[in-house]
Image (cartoon, rainbow, N blue to C red; front, side, top):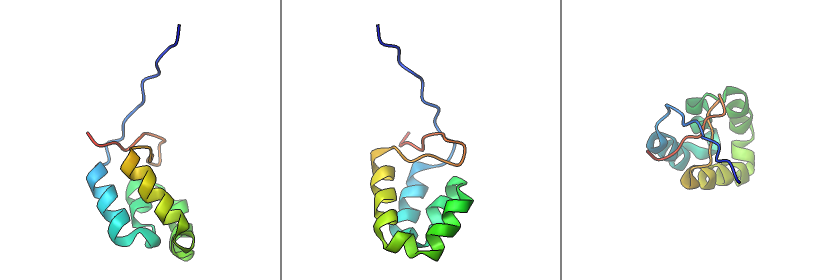
Amino acid sequence: MSEQVAIEKSEKDWTVVLILALVAGPLGVHRFYAGKVGTGIFQFLTLGGFGIWSLIDLIMIALGKFTDGDGKVIANK
């Protein structure tokens, strides 16, 4: 038998994270909102990992796989 693990969902708003990633992705603003301050600073300093990191984040957010600072999934509710 396979057990299904309940995934904890974040209180953060998926739409807000998506819009922040679209508008200011390379600046890491969506990571600050999600509570990932350390990686948000690093993303800001590298301009979104030269665009690649911010693109990956955008894809992860759109797929509902992006997590907040506590490891909870930020999903479209």
